[in-house]
Amino acid sequence: MDHFAKSLATKNLTLDRRIAAPAVIASLFGGIISYIAIAQDRLDIARVERDTKLDLIERLSGRAKGNATVTTTDITVPDLPFVAAETETTAAAEVDRLIRAVVMKANGAVLSTQASIERGNDTTTRRIEIQAVIEGQIEAIQRTLFNLEIGAPLIFIDDLALQLVERSSGKNEKAQMPLLQASLTLSAFWRSAP
Image (cartoon, rainbow, N blue to C red; front, side, top):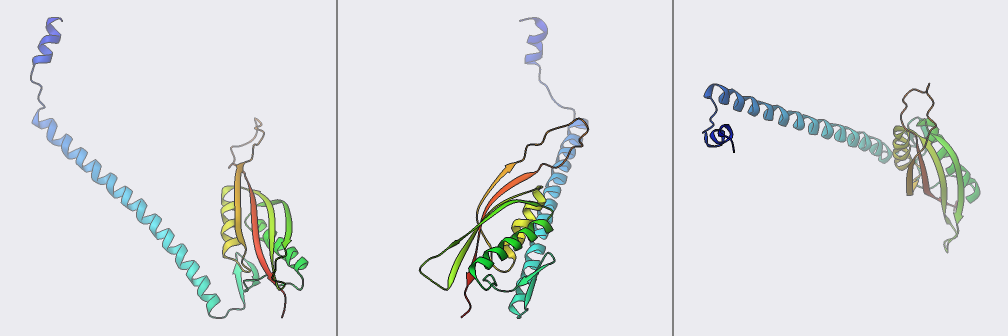
């Protein structure tokens, strides 16, 4: 070991008070600012959640007051839990139409749909299952799922699978939001008129 390293290892290192005090104050101030920023972010998120829930409560309370229709992003449908149609086949077509309208309103695209009607022991109620494949940006998929679940008639999302759509990247293409493809299993119920 050379003389310089040996003297450095045994030397008592201290910080000058003129440097240490401002450094401690600056780090304390930085910590407080970070804490305030994190608390503000959490408060903003809580406000958005509250506003969303209040909006949903207003929509639902409108139903409870006996409104004849509910508007789901400018698509007006009857305020019933069951699909309004004369037959189970027309009910399946109506569910398909409603799904397509909600997807198109959310700026998505319906690639395919397939309806099937489950006939059980109950002859008055039928479960209509729709297999749908839709495509859109994440915002369109989110709006579609939200509007399907809060709309009337009741449409349930039984299964959802998402995958990223691969695009060919040309040199002249601008950076775009990624497209998602959602494979959905949806169900609704139809009841025959008494």
